[in-house]
Length: 273
Image (cartoon, rainbow, N blue to C red; front, side, top):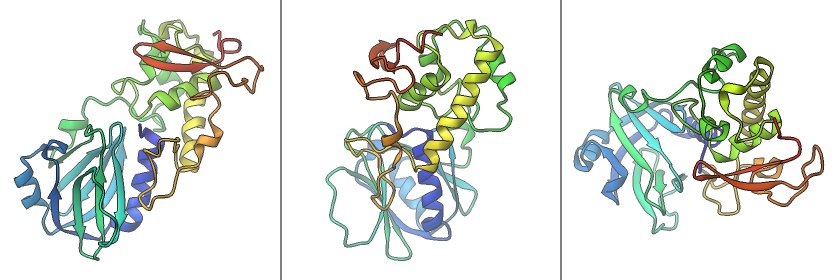
């Protein structure tokens, strides 16, 4: 579930508590989480490594390690990271644990086992297919309009395609399209320059507002901050998960439909464009 605002929040929060710490040892509880290298090599190469920086790319967390290697973490559907004391209660869904030199540990739990980690000196081999960052100043309205030209696909699936834009998923694509007044089934190559500019503005506004509120924690509690606090943006969602509620812009009922194998929440009245 975690999308750009949630992963950006995690990166910022973890920077405050992990940078400068060293990994005393790592424990792999479920080998399938470690995509590369072999789990035994993964454990051996992490021992004693100091964490120098933490950043985000798309939905990936990147932990820069002393020695010019990177620990890449993708939470996927149900992954969760927690910084906790050694006496914290055990979690049956724990997949990997990093024991730190200050006595704390970074625990990765993942009930659905979709999350993945990789230790690599070449992160571009894992991240090279990602599209532009939605909040990068280089992604101007004009550039977005150019990216949309020649794309015959529908807007909702396109916005959630990580090769097109890195970081958007179901929640924020729905919110962005509502704010831009665009139907999720609208063909991308039919947008006018004005509509593309409106979409660009909606992307920036929605993501920035969600980051400011530390992301969205839904009822399933799959995403929380490393100290267990929830993100606060759920109370500000306009269409996602609000089927049957009134659109705050026109009063029509929000509907839910299947689009490209995923759900889309939108207002049929004011998202006709």
